[in-house]
Image 1 (tube, one colour):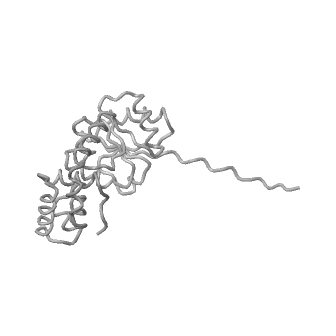
Image 2 (cartoon, rainbow, N blue to C red; image 1 turned 90 degrees about the vertical axis):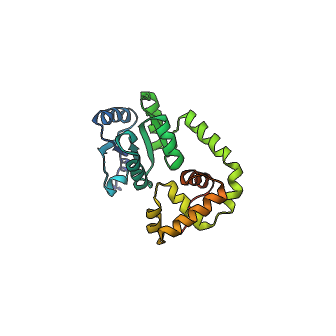
Image 3 (tube, rainbow, N blue to C red; image 1 turned 180 degrees about the vertical axis):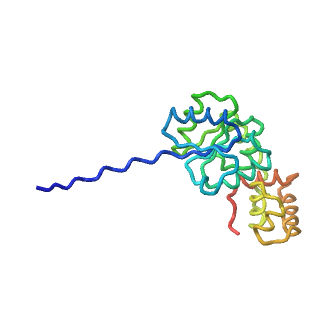
Length: 217
C-alpha cells in the first residue's frame, strides 16, 4: 500500500500594495477599500526604498508632493503597475499625458465602489482610467495625427531624447543618461521640435510618446 501523500499546493501570496502618500487619513481609506476586494498587504511611505517598489501595485498620491517630486517618483516606480489616487482631474490629465505607463487614476472623492472595481482590475493586470479622462486623451492624440509625418522625419536619437523628456528628465539629466553634452541635447531638442512643429519640450514629448516606444540607445 502506498502511503505517499501529496503536499498541499502552496497558497497564493497576498498582493503587496505600496501607498506613496503623507496622509494617514488616506492610508486608512485605502486599507478599507483594499480589504473589501482582497487580503492585501499595504505599506505607506513618502520616499520608498528600491525593494519596496517591487510590489504588485503602487498607489501615488500626487497631492502629497510637488510636481517635480511626483515626477521623480513616477520615474522610480516605472517598472511596477502604478495608479494615481486622491488626484485632481487637471493634475491627473497632465501626469498621464506625460507618463503614459500610469495604469489607473482615482480622483479625490471617488466612491468605494469605484475603488473596489478599479483596484480589482489593476491587480488583475488591467487598466482603470475615468471615462472622461480617456476621451480627452484619445481626442488629443487624434489631433496629433497630422504630426505623424514630422515624427517619421525624426532621427532615432531625437525620438529617444524626446521620450526621455516625456519622462520628466531635464536636458542635463538626459545628457548624463546618454553620455552626451547638454549642448548636444539642446541641439537635438531644437531640431526635433522644428520638425514636429511643436512649441515646447512637453508638446514634442507627448507627440513622440503617442506614436512610438522609446528607442534603444
